[in-house]
Length: 262
Image (cartoon, rainbow, N blue to C red; front, side, top):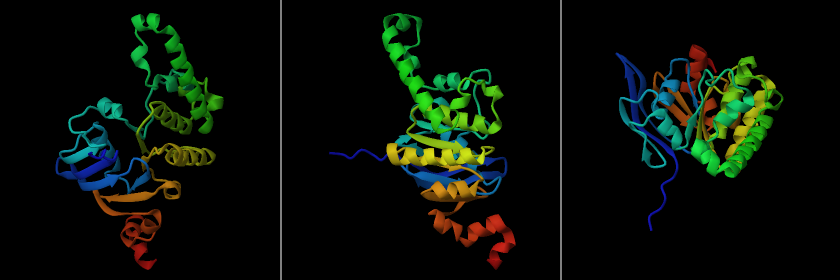
């Protein structure tokens, strides 16, 4: 009997160029969907470009990307999301006039019942599904410190709270893996702690892993199982947070010539 392939994100020789500039340079990595993986590097290293290639927003020029054994080549962003690979953005997206509650419920994957005909036939079932989604939204909002803002409009939130709402919306889609682009940016220190604890709990209790870009290295190093370091589009180091924190090449990128003196 054949074994079920692991639900991992596999990158093989992924390359993306713009004109004469190589933004992602022959990147290969096996990223576990049940672990927390950090992707770090200086500005312009190619981190978000790699996210865009994975999720279909700006496909790679060459190489292959598979998720759970399925090729992502040629898939539109919504098709990648339908497979369970859900991402956030550096700048939160969504409907600014919706409340936090409405925004979260709009992301729940229960819209197959929302047609006039099905609304009449399955009205009781729809109410049950809506109640479950509301309970899920309340639980997530509470964990992220958004519950007191539940009925505020999105455009009334601070930039940090909009980042947390972006994360909350993606959780409502019941992802198989999260790709988080700068989730801690502009978030208040006390809420960064909440965010970190929730990401850890999702891994430990649900087996839900994350691939995370963030410039807050303290936040990442506390929660990551594995760290990949990009510089000029290429992976220059991979390892545990402890290994990366003492890697001379990584220190040189962040500290420049001072790394030689450490």
